[in-house]
Image: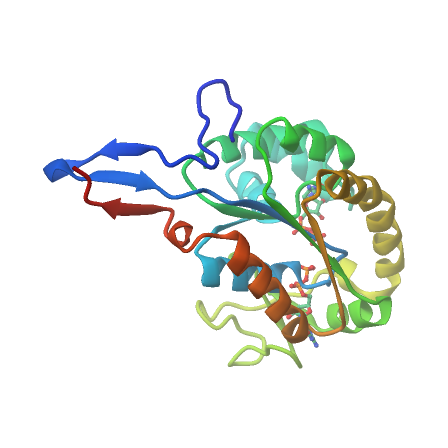
Length: 252
Ligand SMILES: Nc1nc2c(ncn2[C@@H]2O[C@H](COP(=O)(O)OP(=O)(O)O)[C@@H](O)[C@H]2O)c(=O)[nH]1
Ligand SMILES: Nc1ccn([C@@H]2O[C@H](COP(=O)(O)OP(=O)(O)O)[C@@H](O)[C@H]2O)c(=O)n1
C-alpha cells in the first residue's frame, strides 16, 4: 500500500473502465527488496526475477547515477559523497528514491540497493508495505573471487563475470558493444572493509524484516543453485496475473 496520502493500491483488485466497455482489473501488486553483501548476486538474481516475474527492477545505485548524469540537485549532492567513496546520506537517498517509488503505484517492483541503513528501511516502511525481503548469505571467499572478476557496463548496470557469465566479446557489453569497466572498490583490499560495513549496517535491517515475518535468507556459493529456491518461493507469492501488472478482463 503506498501511503502517499491518496493512493492505496497494494493487494487491491480495483477496476478502471476502459474503451469498449472493458474494465481493467489491476492485479495484486508485489513489492520486494533484495539484500546482500557486495558480490552476493543481487544484480544477477534481480535480473532473473525481473524477467521471470515481469517485475520492474529498481536499482538505487543506477538511480543515483541517473540523477548525477541529469545534474538534479540531489544528484549533484550525491556525487560529492560517491566521489569520496562514501555512502550517500539517508536524507539524500530518501529524497531521491521515495518520489520514484510514489510514481510506481501501479507496478510490481523489486528493489536492489535500498535500504542500506535502518533509517532508510524506516523511511521505506512509512511509504509502502513490502511483501518480501530476500537476503543473500554468501561466504567471504566466494565474494572475493567473484568481485575480482566482475565487469560492468556502466550505462545499463549489466554485470558480467569472466567465468560465470562472460560477455560474447571480451571487454564489450553484449547489447551495446560498449566497453566494460571494473570498479576500484571491487578489489580484494577494499572488500574486507565493505563487508564489515555491510554486516554492521544490514544487521538491524535484517532484524526489522525478520520481526515483520517477511525475511527469506538464501545461503550458498552458486547463484544457479540458489535460484531454484528463490524461483519457487516467488512462484508461490506472486500470483500469475501480476506478471503483467494489469490484465484486461471483460466485465459486465
Ligand atoms: N562464479 C560465479 N560468479 C557469479 C555467480 N553469481 C553471480 N556471479 C558474478 O559475481 C559478480 C557479482 O554479482 P552481482 O550480481 O553483481 O552482485 P551484487 O554486488 O550483489 O549485485 C558478477 O560478476 C556476477 O556475474 C556464481 O554463481 N558464480
Ligand atoms: N542506498 C544507497 C544506494 C547507493 N548508494 C551510493 O551509490 C553508489 C552506487 O550504488 P550501487 O548500489 O551501484 O553500489 P555498489 O553495489 O557498487 O556498492 C554506492 O557506492 C553508494 O555510494 C548509497 O549511498 N546508498
